[in-house]
Length: 357
Image (cartoon, rainbow, N blue to C red; front, side, top):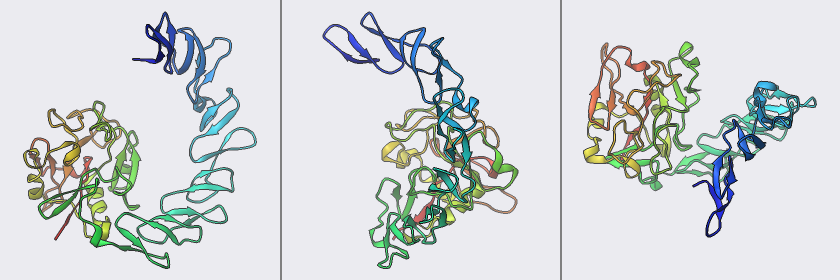
């Protein structure tokens, strides 16, 4: 299983983190060791760790030794910094904060990559991209390429909706009756963006809830899960609170259409018996089994979400009335849950819909 190449009788070369012993591949068994001679002699460490040439073990990772260092050649010399930092003349990592809206830089004055909605201009600084629905801006602020289902104007100053080409048939959408539905969670694809008016945090960081009530989390959203045909993991999906979900769909101006959260009654028609899950249906995580879709536990602790649980198998509806709160829906079991107090502050999947002719 861990053999890289073999002859007719035994293995002759092993994969990384294994060594050859008697024709078999044996695990190095040493922390952070990428290549070894045996279980006590490491030859190479994984990126970010230092090989101790005396003990032949991998010592403390670079980020603990040199702040914001991704890779280093010794405990005092950094060779590569984390994103948002550059390697200065002292082999230390300095932030790119001297350049507004820059997320990667090669020095304190040269930006190489700007934040979303900005581009690197001719002065190696970041300028805002003012062309709506533009996928890539040029150095003069004009548009080079538009998002899918938008066409670039001749003067390259606008991206116009190309409604005639949108039929809700590509991999990001599926159609049920007269509704077009986003098949994946909003935020899980570059074509299903989260607007700048919604704050995005990584799982494990609850910063959003101390400041605003429009927040999504991205990262490991379940402790136990499997992939969906190997290409859409149940572990790593974007989940949002209800206020963020409503904002995301209202600002999703895809193909020039008006999008919104689905109603409770619409969601009821999407039960597994009629639409299916998995790669050929609506890609909702499955908290149970047998539906040929990504699996993720029903109530597994997930540090960072508001109530310490993540529910990527549940989706938000747009229903709200009186003193009631939003509805959530366990689509894989056809169970409705809500309204209930403060349910808006849970974090769940977001799917948007639009009417088709």
